Amino acid sequence: MTEEIDNDIENWQRRAELAEAALAETKSMATAKLIHAELKVEAIRAGMVDLDGLKLLDSSEFVLDRQGEVAGASGIVAGLKRAKPWLFGQGVSSSAAAHAPRPEAPRTRHANELSYDEWLTARAALLRRR
Image (cartoon, rainbow, N blue to C red; front, side):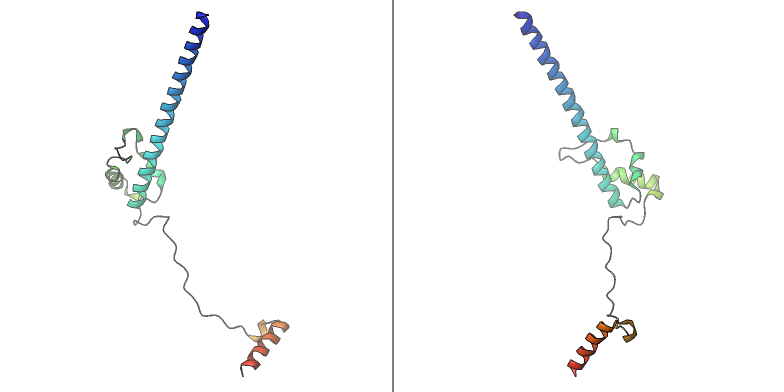
């Protein structure tokens, strides 16, 4: 009976160690994704043209502060901008909203472009307005 209890204890300890390892791995992955997202935001603000340039940074050096933000992220991106200015454009991000096309006056259709039914409808509308 004591052997069964010892086996159960060892089994539960092994399971607890595996769970702690999985939790630590998940936490480190979440932290890495959060750091990447923060750097991505700062890079877009700085006008980075190609976000693949963030791969040039060593993300293992970065730490999160209490608010969950990368400490000195804007300074890091500014340093990258000084070191590799070709990665940055005019400060316009690719996610900027496109401008709507200018409105044009409606183009009148010539009678030769109308089908016979359309011509009859347009002719009747003209005669009604008189």
